[in-house]
Image 1 (tube, rainbow, N blue to C red):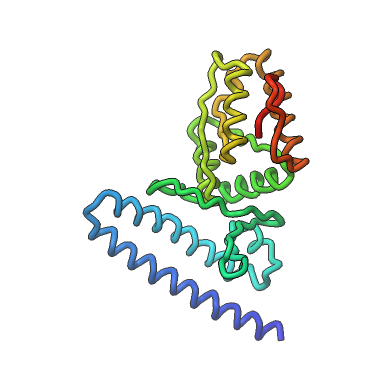
Image 2: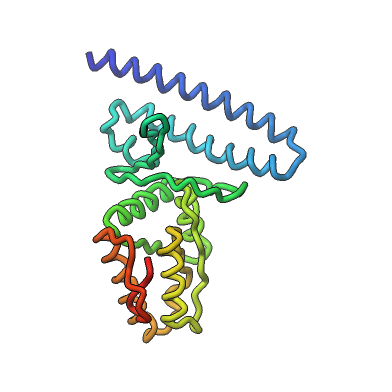
Length: 232
């Protein structure tokens, strides 16, 4: 019985692999013909996504024979959930699930996804599931910010990147946090360690207030003039 299931799964993966290869060949033909810049950018982004999908198909065809396999669960998956006559979309990874943001971000490029990118995705989605923040670390120019932005694209969430400097005070950061809370977007704070130590001590309390509010699923916060509270 297991042999029959394996053979059947192998045929399905092979069929999917052939479908992906055919689609990639068609996209390659189209990008060679494209003369408009916008159309070319769109095709290049599709090719980048489909190449990753083809590579993942090759890996899954050798290791995944069940929906409970970790190789399957660790992928960023999209699931349609019927809501009456319409369907809602959720994004799943490992044991986490998030509502799709439906935030249109324009005709921009996509990041080349590597095995390290997948690990960063799993860490960040698990952190969000636990109502925590994420702090990717590494040398300059290795793609920390781009990885966060690309995960935002995957979940259709608007990502605002802030380049921090020594001149930032807790009031400026408080306004940024307040804006992010009200819009539902993500904030990516580059060079966070440049902020003065005295400011960071207050910012830590601000972030703690936000994380506690997320854990308690609060819809609205205090509107008083207080650096430790925010209007969610």
